[in-house]
Length: 208
Image (cartoon, rainbow, N blue to C red; front, side, top):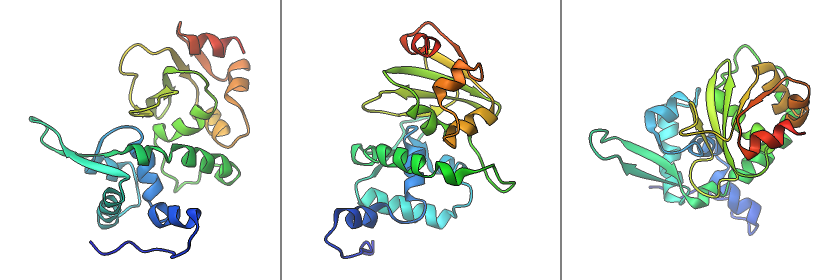
């Protein structure tokens, strides 16, 4: 592979951008925080990226130790990409970027793609403790692993097992939380988020 481009600056921020500053790289990490993904799944959930660019970014990220690729055993026999512990360390970076970009989100444009699990990061910011949370939106269901120290942080579909809490809300409310206009706590308190379940997280949210 050709050598990685560098800013050639003796600065940790510049060194970090050498690895993750290319277009699409951080969004690939966002997708892989949901767990191992096949190339076709990544391409489907990154609308706008070309196949050539996605393949190139994945090769760069594997070389730089952010992702790995492994072959699934039969009958799957497909390759999947997954984030490494070093790549997973970018979760706080994505959280900070999401917070910083709240004011830029605005109303959804007609050309904006959306996937239900893209709301996982802003919802995670409003949850404390540990546990499995299932979320229901009009666009679909996804689940969050609050306080997870390793493994997937969130994923598509219902929770894989008994959830500690389930949140049901509409996309308007979720977008307001994503824009920083509404906290999850206030959304629960005002009835815009329905909380069900008997786990510690569910009880804590209902008691706010």
